[in-house]
Length: 150
Image 1 (tube, rainbow, N blue to C red):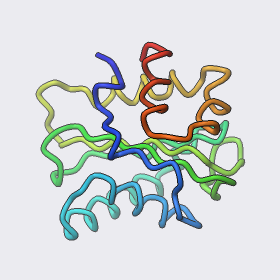
Image 2: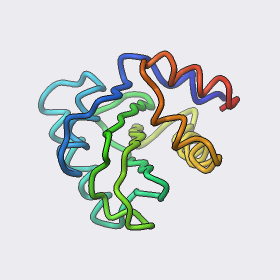
Image 3: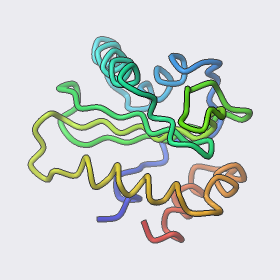
Image 4: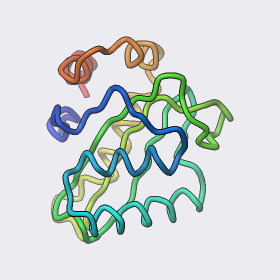
C-alpha cells in the first residue's frame, strides 16, 4: 500500500485561504467534491473528533480524520496554509500542513488506520515540513510521496 495511491492532484491545495481551524476543515472537506449536505455532516464529524483532542501532531502538521457514512471509500486530501493557523497542536505551534482522512464506518479493505499511520510516519521524517513548505505544484507533492516511498 502506497500513500500516493490514495491522493489525487485535485485533492491537494497548496494555498488554503482559511484563517482558523474551522475554515481549514471546511476547505479541506470541499476538496473531496461532495454535495453540500454531506460536506456539512463531514465537517460536524471532524469538529467532534477535534473536540476530543487536537489532531495537530506537531512540527506544523495536523491529520484531521474521522469515519463517516458520507463517503463510500477512503478519501484523503492535503492542504497547506502559509504562516499556519492555531490548531491546539501538541507542540502548541501553528499548523501549516493538513492531511485529511475520511473513511466509511465499515471498510472491507480496512485502510483507514494504515493510511493514518503512514501519514504520521511520513510527517516525522526530519526534512518533511521544510519540503512541504517548498512545494509549488500539487504534482510536486505527489513526487515527494514517491521519493519518500510512502
